[in-house]
Amino acid sequence: MGGIGFKARGRIEDMSDDIRGLDDVLKFAWERVREDEVLVHWTVTERHLQPFGLVHGGIYCYVNESTASMGGQVYVGDDKVVVGVNNNTDFIGQAGPGDALTTRATPVHQGRSSQLWLIETRGSAGALVARGHVRLTNLDRPAPPGTAAAIRR
Image 1 (cartoon, rainbow, N blue to C red):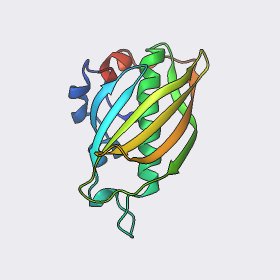
Image 2: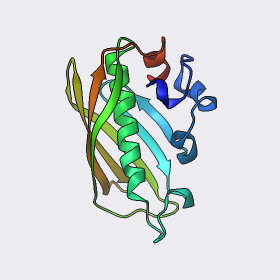
Image 3: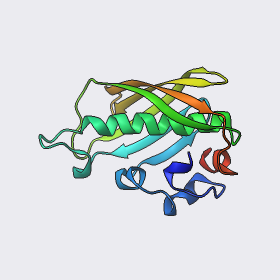
Image 4: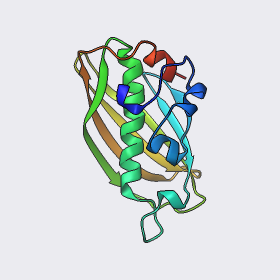
């Protein structure tokens, strides 16, 4: 998780100044980050779209890997670092500008060396928009001190 670009500061609300890259650009609102569930809310804007006016599939792949990685890191704590090794995402429904989406990640398996997470993104009416699985490897190297506590919410 050292590559996500923030210093462990104790609370997820405090991370916003240190987050770099897509998490900042996509404006995810992290409601819950736990080892058994991650919830992110986001509203589709022009920045999420492909040229045909729909959310780019890569955005769903990214939110899937990001949520699984955050929950997976909380699970392993600071003793290990998690990295994604497989991301399968199915695009089921459509979303466009102004649509409010919620992404929920839950673990299917959490072991000593790997994890498998199920991630679903739904619209405000509950319709399934995207669904995927992310497999994580738990690397035997320590995360920066305080990382797991900083992202847990």
